[in-house]
Length: 169
Image 1: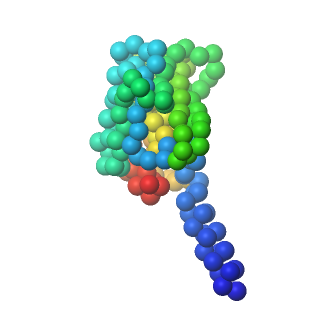
Image 2: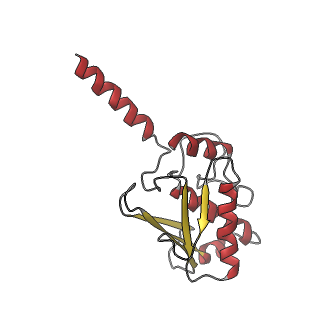
């Protein structure tokens, strides 16, 4: 009976940490560096703004940019229709890295006169995956991680996103 109780307790703990808003492809901590690859100063600025939005959000993050970082960020005109793509590799806690790609073509075609705002929103969203946040969280609250967000006005982590990062780490 004690074993069943322990199993149920462990199962409940696992279910809580793996809620619908948690993304297992994230980094093992709230502090990591990313390397800008093959992008111009405008896109480096979008990356730096996204990092700054997270670092100033109150979520306890320290996202740096380093020329020696294993994780990468790039932007180009890809043929696919996605805005951004986060691809983790390695094992969380051992050798996890990621590659972020932002699709300048889709952003340009769909943002109208709001290309800068949409690019910053997309960049900050993709960095959120590095902080273990999933797409489309199960909440009615405003969230940077929702695909349905207004990319013109939601460029920073929302209070819901900050609380999720704090809960995860």
